[in-house]
Image (cartoon, rainbow, N blue to C red):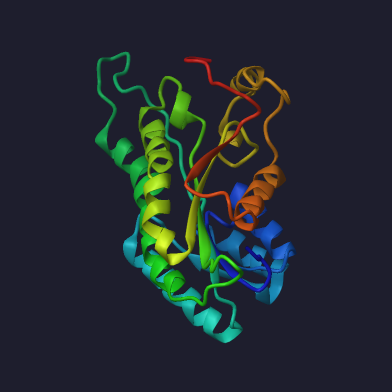
Length: 262
């Protein structure tokens, strides 16, 4: 599928892996609609990328906020004439906590809700609201393709560590919904792909202590380092351009399998 002259909606697009993805797609001729909470960062990115970028301040756990962003994106693409080519659902959070702590207190439901509402509900809500504007787009190429949905899971979906019950549940759900989503969308010529990165340099990993980060890097097979944002962005680009990638979860992890504890 062609990237140039298509609009891609990217949640979490003003920082980290989402920003790297936005820059990469923009460099290959895409228009990018960036959804993020950080309006200051969003304004800076739009200034950097120019009129091929549009920023919308969005909390993905807020259905109405997503709706306004989709409405704004559709209004924008009517002016640019660049149809929606895909959605990259990159917004996510991690809030570690043991399901039962040392004081025999259970993990708060507010903690669980916060993680699930952003990582899972927010992903599905963004996708479902964007899809009506993708299914009606003109099909392109010999396969009649209309676009691609790219979701972000995590290696924690498969081998989550202690304290990652809520996070692993949210990312495991994203991984498991990939195939049924692809099946639902097949008749519309829309693909679904999930990328499951392990340790990558991002705003989330910046919060880790040096000791924790080193322990995680030690669990990598090769290369013995955290992934870099451009490596993730390249995987997104490959997922867009390679039409045979569909209904699958791609582990981007340097053969890392996370230990039970650090």
